[in-house]
Image (cartoon, rainbow, N blue to C red; front, side):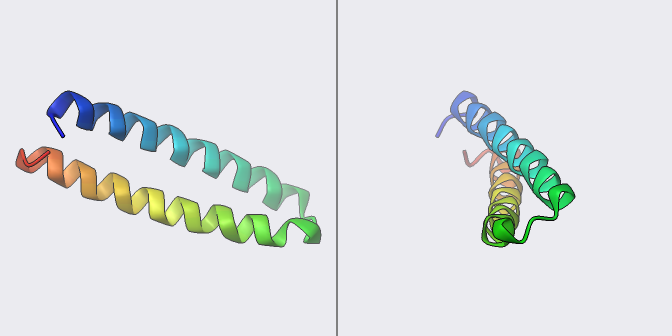
Length: 65
């Protein structure tokens, strides 16, 4: 992965993180028990996405991307 490709990937991960975070906030505010599984799935996606962001940032900083 070259630097430009890495930056594009990073931008997409930031968009995904923001979308999941906004959706999670909305579902928590609704406090609807039907949405409990979706809330858990969104929480998992946020954690995984943040992990990928951290990994890619480190990779880009080291020049290994």
